[in-house]
Image (cartoon, rainbow, N blue to C red; front, side, top):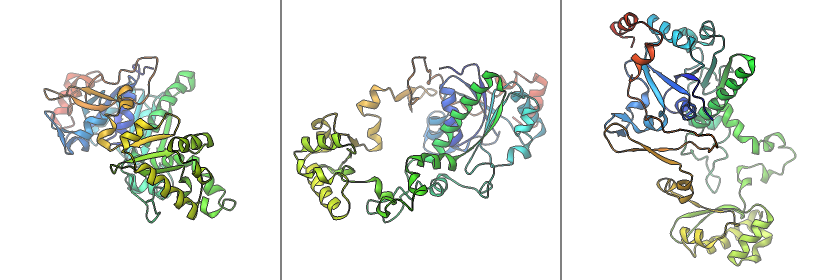
Amino acid sequence: MNLEDYTVLDLTWLLPGPYGTMLLGDMGAEVIKIEEPTRGDYARWLEPVVEPTDSGALFHSVNRNKKSVTLDLKSDEGREAFLELAADADVVFEQFRPGVVDRLGIGYDDVRAVNEDIVYCSLSGYGQDGPYSDRVGHDINYVGLAGLMHDTVSKDGSFPAVPTYQIGDKVGGMFSAFMIASALLDREAGNGGQYLDVSMTDVVASLGTGQSWRAFMSEEVPEDEQSPSAMTAPCYDVYETKDGEYVTIAAREDKFWEQLLEELGREDLAEYQFATGADAEYAREELQAEFETRTRDEWEEYLSDETMFAPVNEFDEVFEHPQLESREMVREMDVGDGDPFSYVGFPAKSSSDIDDMRSPAPEFGEHTHDVLSRVLSEDRLTELEENDAI
């Protein structure tokens, strides 16, 4: 699995696009991050800072395997330089609000005029059309509109809970990378370049596919199965342990429910697998009493692999868990002369090498001269410098 023959011009910042372009970079693509010359990607300046680089931890986390070029796209010289880079690139990935790239003169039609085989991806909150297309937003807005937040409720269902992960941002970036790779494959088949319009809200809505029947069949589904709590049952819930930690049980299939009850010595609860109302409350209380007899780690040792059990890890425990360690999901690279910086590794394995730790996040403008010298003369580079366009 290698994208080393492809060049991506990355016009994204903060989290959504950079996560997607990092995945492409992990798979070998040359990712050239275009940053405006005064501040660059905002994530560079968010605390905490990774010493000795003076760049933020968020920036380092999602910008490995990239090059940084500073370029003022609002200037004629900067726009012309960008289009010369785009003429030799394979992908342009932008994250501006709809219409901005066209006003800058670097939109799909502008780039296609110099490179008809370009794969051009626009990632935005709501997509390039529709009544919300021009609306500003952040992750909480997208997951709210797409229904995920309404289904992320407190245990008593009293209020929607705010997810602690930026779900729309990350799945938007991931789906963009998937679409870009697919478009490149389509181009290899002789179908030319194409334009990709990815909406973070649409992607979050797609995550609801497994529950969408509740909306489409609402008149046929009993009311108690239309609510978010329909996903929970005594056999599919979270229980507190002796040490105040938590475990998850997901024994929705009969054989796993029977196995769990056998190991707990509570076969008397067999009929309560999907109980509702007072029966569900009784079964949960009984199971809760059982789980309070051991600590979370003791339960992990005690229960077999056939019980649909897993611990609820605190965030700082996740990457120390032996399962993630065995999968090499924590990787390190040196950044400058400081201590190694820890990264979350590429989330898939392949029989073809994936060299996901080739280089740490780039310094601001680190590759400006090297990259632009591919398409510009020294005189033009000097002119760009004199006009503060790089």
